[in-house]
Amino acid sequence: MVWKRNIALMLKFLAGTYLVVLLLCAAQHAIDGSDFSTLLSQRLFMALAVCAGMYPFVGFVSVREPLPAGGMARHGQPLVDIMARADYRLAESDGGKLVFRAASPVARAVALFEDEVTMEIGDDGLLRISGTRKRVSRIRLRVGDYVRSIT
Image 1 (cartoon, rainbow, N blue to C red):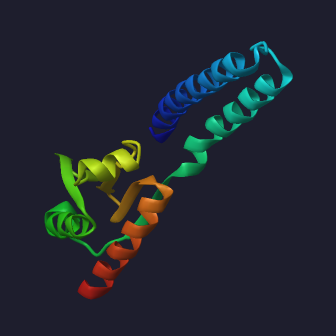
Image 2: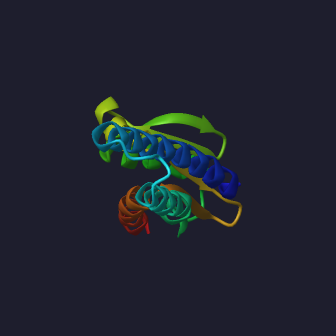
């Protein structure tokens, strides 16, 4: 249910955006005494709200990568090793699903704690990698190298 996660992230991002706009409006009010309902404030809020609403749908992806037969029993530990080399640690392991997070707290903070990468091997033998677009594309390259090395 990727869409549920996207909606939760959108609401979180909208709340953060609203707080930033509110603080900017308060600062503007303190500086020049303008009203919160000025046209500039309204436009700024609307523009940021639109961007915030689109972010989870644009910033998060889920891709599929073919794997040779063997499932999680064969490919689980190599995937954990690939992620360790990419500075990720295994946060959760639930059967056929692996959840990784950045190994360092600084890296997590820089990513605004949106550093989760999820891997699952489906019944069709495809590895599904989910997370932020940037991280998924980097991990996908590493997984592709691994697949080429074992075939």
